[in-house]
Amino acid sequence: MTSELKARPASPSRGRRLGAFVFLSPGLTYLVVLLLVPLALVLSNTVFQRGRFGGVVYEFTTENFARLMDPLYLGVVGGSLRIAALTTAIALLIGYPTAYAIARLSPRWKTIALVAIVLPFWTNFIIRVYAWIILLSGPGLVNSGMAAIGLGPYELLYNQGAIVTGLLYSYLPLMVLPLYAAIERLDPQLREASANLGASPFTTFRKVTLPLTVPGVLSGCLFVFVPSFGNFVIPEILGGNKSIMVGNLIRDQFLKARDWPFGSTLALALIAVLLVLLMAQAWMARRA
Amino acid sequence: MRRSKLLFVPLWVTYVFLYLPIVVLVVMSFNAGESAYTYEGFSLKWYGELAADERIRNGLINTLVVAVGSTAIATVLGTLLAVGLARHSRSKALDALALMPAVLPDLVLAIGLLLFYGVIALTLGHYSVILSHALFSMAFVAAVVRTRLSGADTSLEEASRDLGAGHVVTFMKITLPQLAPGIVAGALLAFTLSLDEFVIAFFTIGNAEPTLPIVIYSMIRFGVTPKINALAAILLLVSFVAVIAGQRLTRIGEAQRAEG
Image (tube, rainbow over all chains, first blue to last red; front, side, top):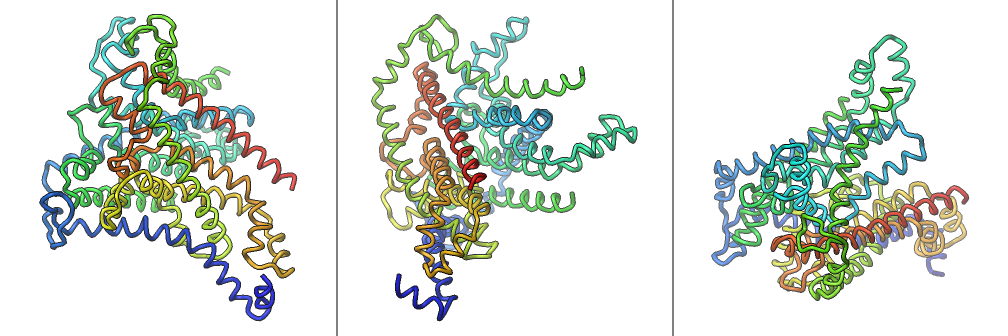
């Protein structure tokens, strides 16, 4: 400490550099070793061959990418995109009016309403998905309810509808929060001005509220789409054997087929789709 | 008047959607019958069976071990990183790097870590899950602490340094106490995230005894039993209490900051 005391006036920048080193190096080392190196491994694996008994043989090949272009695998990627997009669209349709209603509450009720939106999100993820097995199964609550009004029974479980329901249930709060933040920020005078100038509530919404909340819409869509697209737990629990998403495929390559290079190639495809979306979001948010 | 009531219809629809499954789970956990679908009267027998289930008990212990270990690492590294990024760096790239583990899909992190542990020939086990959980938890701790830092008054730190204290002493005596509520909130977040984390644990645990989410996952794959409902009800209660306690804590922290 005394040496620092003496050294400080002589060279203030030395102390600063030392501080930067002390605070930044542990965390950055951790990030380099456990994040960047693993990601580099995923990336490099895509051009290597699988070992006969799992693992990786470090010989160059383009076979993994050729295999990715197989209609079978492209179909899985396309199907996952469709399911994630459908989930995101429904989440937006439910989430926007919900966030709008919360933004209109009194400050006290706002907090309570928001906590109530987030609360289910903090409970065990697997259990939340499991709840839908009970609700959607043959003798489950949804079918009982429909039977009461003379409908059904329907096959609700183990299909794409069940997957979308599970994804929606798991990630809806991630849509509501950014939408709420965007709507909350709006100046209510803008709406009043629009109404005073003779615009109908619908026109006001379409021309004033919606355009001004586009950044919130984009963030919400991204927050729902990203975890939906790469999911493998929900399709596995609620989708049965019939439907498989790109996440299931990656999991199987790593833990069942032991084809790590092809699994890495699929993961790269997943990252690529997400990067494109991220850039599209940034571009649209700048324009909005 | 009618229109403003109509406004809140979607809100109620959302709440029914979010809470109906939870209510059904809890009600069915008290079912006297064997079925997970039809209620046949009140009983606590599934809670008894749950308490007697060794796999679940061990799973809970393993989960707690992993959560405590990863939270400890993440809290220390995340706090240092937050201070370092806020006070000693202007790099946007480093900011982005620090957030990356929280933003990347868990599956991508999981396979990357699995490959990495394979390359360095680390035998998988609870410690590899601890190291992996600490990675994304650190990002969340750093983010929470930074929010607190950006609101903190820097004049105390400057005064401390003007009076001759070095960076480390200033950090220990001035910055750290100011940051305490943020660090506690970050640690709580890290702990909860680790308790619930499935995908990364599933990939990096190897043949070690499974954590609770993995136990639940394999139980569900074998079929539906009211025992899982009883477990669900208990976990729900725990996380609800934790969230409300966390809310209280942040409110106390905010109040302190407003006073100070």
